[in-house]
Image 1 (cartoon, helix red, strand yellow):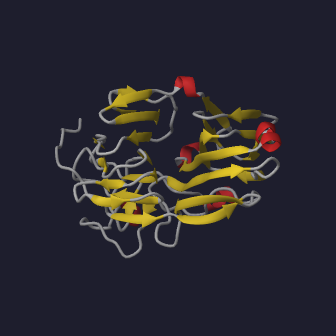
Image 2 (cartoon, helix red, strand yellow):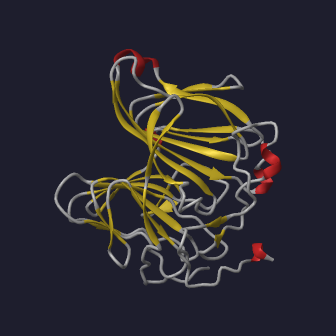
Image 3 (cartoon, helix red, strand yellow):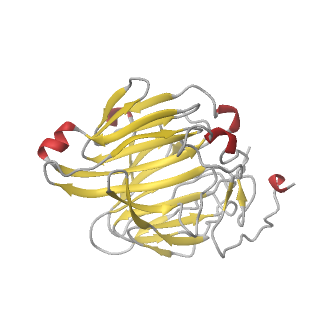
Amino acid sequence: MTEPVTAERSPLAVLDGTRTLEGEGFLVTRPFPTARLDHIGPFLLLDEMGPADNAPGEAKGAPDHPHRGFETVTYVLSGEIEHKDSQGNRGLITPGDVQWMTAGSGIVHSEMPSPLIMSDGGKVHGFQLWVNLPRSAKMRAPRYQDLLRKDIPVVDIDGGQAVLIAGEAYGHTGPADTHLPITYLHVRLLPESETVVEIDPGHVAFVYAFDGSGDAGAARGALSKGQMAVFDAGGGPDPAAIRRRRPGPAHRFCRAPDRPGGALRAVRDEHPRGDPEGVRGLPGGSHGSDRGDVRVAGLKSQESSKTPLDS
């Protein structure tokens, strides 16, 4: 059992998201992977999709493409995304819904604007997070978890609200069934408010701000829209204390902590990041690396980078 720790951690780094085009040409802000940060433990990618205000017929999506060996987690804030796959499954992801797709042994799918968005136009905004699978689950059968808005806890906290998609926080448990010990939160803070999320000191974490500005961690590092703070393992149970600093729109962020097996540079995760053999015959699927570390270029942990995976 982990004993309570009261110390608060400071960010190892605060990084800017990179704006790029995906799919048919829709805009995303991508805090990772980038030139400085390849991945964070088992987390392979985070994209903020939009927000984009589309005229009728203007919205773009991601036509058929393959995935294998990891999971895609799609969280929609505005608009609608229609999903179809090679197994004949189809569905609609509407505001507040989450689709947690385990690609496993492989699947080809598409994520496109819904017929309503295409005919009438409208705002589309959401996130996609990629989560690696442990080696033992990489070839499991694909599955879907369709988490509807009504089934996802919205917790009232001091100065705001928290949407709990996976894991435990604020005395509640999210509905997602995960292969790894993941906590995935969407928190909204009012001006001059603060929240502290307690997690295991052995977990790494990241916080991505997508509306408003504030600060994060013991060092009160500034965190602005489109930036991500990365927290190393160790220190305290609240590596992502977030404060809204000045008047204006509410400060909103998504955060996702997970357990590593070591420290930066590199922080290792006990679950391999990818399997090079797993992508053969399925181009564009899983990332082709068996490393589970987190690398922030030019930064080092206070601990040794030597981990069991090095030996």
